[in-house]
Length: 93
Image (cartoon, one colour):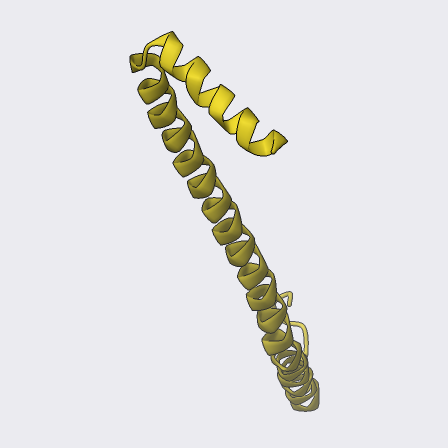
């Protein structure tokens, strides 16, 4: 307020009461906002954990495929063909 402007004590008290009411109103909504943020954070965390599990499963699958491929490449072609024929004869029976 400009210097020399007369301020009534009632005006100061009413401003103080208004500030208190505004603060009370803000803090009454604040916990609800925090709960909303907590729920959102929990959803993000659970989503990230499920994606991490899927990535881990894909990595494990890729390691298994690489291991099987390395075993298959070390076997002679004739053994691989005979193995496939055995499987086919079992399936046909």
